[in-house]
Every structure is written in C-alpha cells, then in structure tokens.
Image (cartoon, helix red, strand yellow):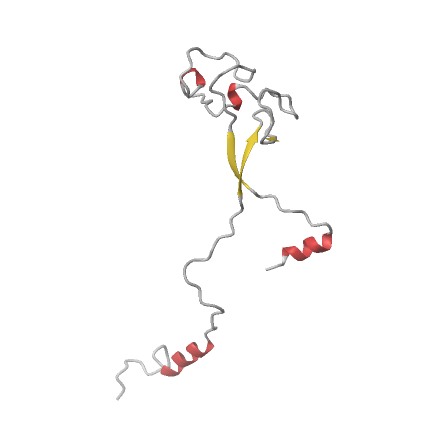
Length: 137
C-alpha cells in the first residue's frame, strides 16, 4: 500500500521536480551584490530668485540678473535669508532691512547656491539617431 493519502499525480511526483530543474533558465552572469544605479551627476548652480534663471558661476553679484533685472545683492538672493527668523536673517544683524528684494550693503551676504542633478542630455543631430537611442541597451 502507498504511504500517501491521495493516489493521483501531484506535487509529490519526482518526475515533476526533474522537469522543473531542467527548464530553469541559466543566469547570464554571476553578480555579487546589488545592481549599481546610474545616477546623474550633480552640479552647483546659482539661480535668480526673481525668474529662476541659472546664473553663471563667475557672475558679478553686485549687478542685476541679465534676464529680469532682479538685484542680485539682496536679502532674498542670500544664503542666510530665512523668513521665520529674527529680522528674516540667520546672521546677527542689528536692524531689519525693510525691502528684501532691493539692493543692500550687507557684510554677511553670500549668494544662494543649490545642488541640482544633471538631467539634460545631449540632443542628437537627426531624428533617426534619436529613435535608435530610445531602444539602445
């Protein structure tokens, strides 16, 4: 007599286990550790507070924005500008500057720089190469 409760073919058949192992795909290559991510590069940029234009790194901060004319040496363009702190500045200033978007002569001024990801890619010269790049591995 059989030691199994049910006699129909099923998951305990040894033939099925052999077939499963034979049909298993062979891995292409052995990897050790997780896959590496292809993260875009980072860059430090200065943006105009008025219009959001990326300014050159060597721009004269005593001037104005070339696109919108916003004063670059102003409180809103500074690293230490914080609307929730005293006199809206993180540095210990003695009196409040009334207009935050107007030019001032603050000794603590430093332009606000942000770290952004390089998301732009070089544009291909023709439509055919752009289409081929879509399906490139």
